[in-house]
Amino acid sequence: MDLATLTDTPFLTSLPQTSYYETVLRLLRWAGQENNIVFRSNIVPLLYEMVLNGVGAALIPDAYYNPADGICAYSISPRITVHQGIGIRRGHPLSQAEEYLIHLLMNNWGSPYYMHQYADYYMSKRKKRFYTYEYKQL
Image (tube, rainbow, N blue to C red):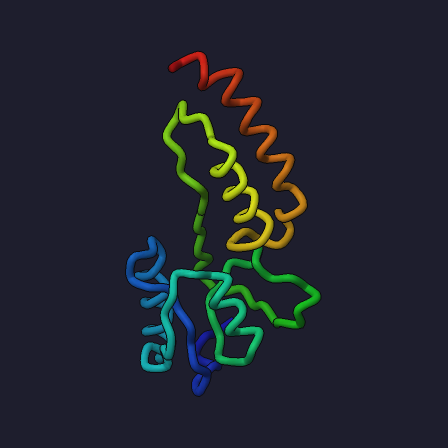
């Protein structure tokens, strides 16, 4: 999609602290849309909710789109690749509270909708990996 076709559309973008901010800003400048930025946040689910509520358009990873939401998603060029995760010090055994927090995050906030059903699976794999490899290195 050519962003220049969205001339009067308000844009919701990330904050400058993200790794892809400069790329997004460059794309919006190139399309003449930089002055249309009305809101900035690094909370992707918030941006998604704002799009759902008709506030404006946002560059959101396609993994966040739920087909049942009725949002039209268009690819842009060049593609922007972003990898996100929860950072944990190697060898750190998770407390019950930390496991619960990660499980909540994976199920309810910030993870793509298709991953929600896999939270238990990923947590069990992490435990197995920890006790098989990481724990021995302590």
